Image 1 (cartoon, rainbow, N blue to C red):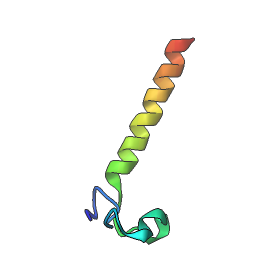
Image 2: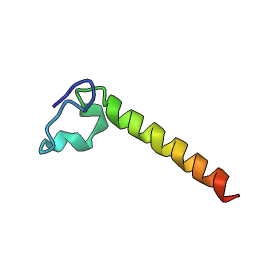
Image 3: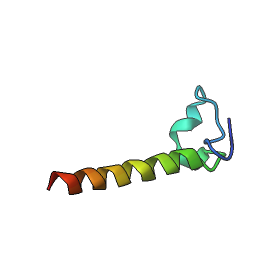
Image 4: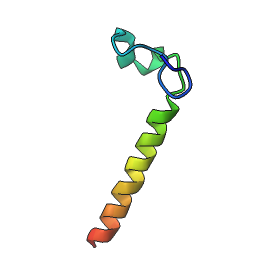
Length: 48
C-alpha cells in the first residue's frame, strides 16, 4: 500500500488493474520499466 514506491493499493484490491485508480506514484514500477528498456537496448546493440 506504499504511496510513493508502489501504487498505494493492496495486491488484492480489484482497482490495482486500473491505472487511473492508483493512489500512489509507483516509482519503483517506473524505475523497473526504465531499467528493462535500457537493458533491452544494450542487448540489441551487443547482438549486432
